[in-house]
Length: 174
Image (cartoon, rainbow, N blue to C red; front, side):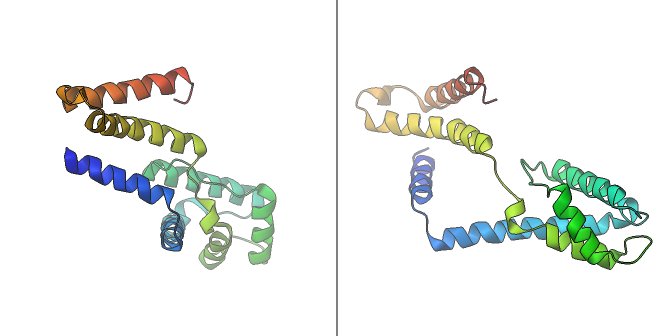
């Protein structure tokens, strides 16, 4: 238990210090998410996009693909491009009449799926910080405050987690 608390404490210190390396790591993660979505879209091209001839059908296909991708991964949030942005990219790359080709589709997907497309919403961050932060803080307080060592970790951690859940429910964050 002691090592877990020490690692959690170190993680808290890391979160407080923003370094260029950590920013680059975040960008790399977001970039790999965008690439994963592009690959997912390429795999589902035949089922959703191959027979698309009009922009409205294309727009609907993109939304369906993104929804399926997020469902599959359990993703919290994806910033879907506005209809105007998507229409502009569609017109830029699909100039000929007829179906959208696989190459055109990939070019459009690469233009609309950027690093900024993936976000972790504020509510999700708040929920995670409270759900995981409360038990860690309770454990650290138990270790630091004299007289609390008599209380078992098996009681402190579940009690703090339950308290965090009650707080989230009462504050309408869940």
